[in-house]
Image 1: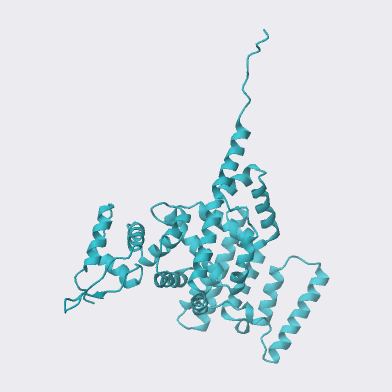
Image 2 (image 1 turned 60 degrees about the vertical axis):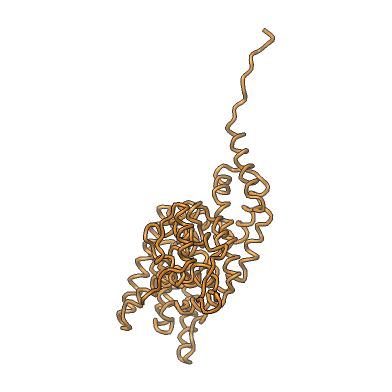
Length: 383
């Protein structure tokens, strides 16, 4: 592809960036434009055969500055877009991301790019392993099982060491890890392609221990029911348990309104911003009314607790690393219709505790200062 010489608007943008200490080639600016990452005003005619010109929009510089900062280490443009969308590179604060008006087209393209490469979720990792088998069923099964057993065994070891990822269900034992691995592969490849007996055995390994006689009776009945369904060519397990393919997840995201994606992003950014103060309050036992309300809410709502724990994990990383965990959490909400529908209720349950973050932070710090202050000793003036 042969590009034309830079337009006047591209030259002006480059000059503005240079004035702020950012050296960006016009070719890079052109790539940003082609990707859809820069807000850009449509060209307009100059009249009387004089050609056309394009002006810079007021928000163009803000986006270009953020992209320039995010691409200083030659990262993929998609990664830079997600970095800017979640954490402004200049301030290294998640809350600053909301001030950068990235175009919808660029954000959606970057999210699809991330989904195609992400293997942090066990089922996504299994799916990638299956894709590497080049369509051979036997190789796909072997690759899926190897990936699943590696993931859940590692998760079990991480849990024993107290360093597992937040929001994950830990295997109780290595046998439980094996059962979860088998069930996970069945979710990806399809229960109908895996075998009823193997799936029932996996379920029995992954459930809490039951009294022997009762447990055997439950799983015998489950196995018989599943085999009966198979004889009638019915799916013995719920179709909803099937892991959605990458294409399914991309389509789900395409159906979510961009304003809703940004709204979820803004709420998650607020939770990340609040995390350091809330973590300090939890460690030190601060009895602030807002903190007590948050703790009561997360104790009564598992999803709210998960969002807060994952937000805290994100807050521990600098922006150049935080974008990845943030993007994963955002997609976790937006590509799961049930999660997305309950998300407003799950987070508004925290209201009004996070309405004044700066005030909450000051109160927590003041409480810590008061705890560490020692009473001043005064001379006895009666002597």
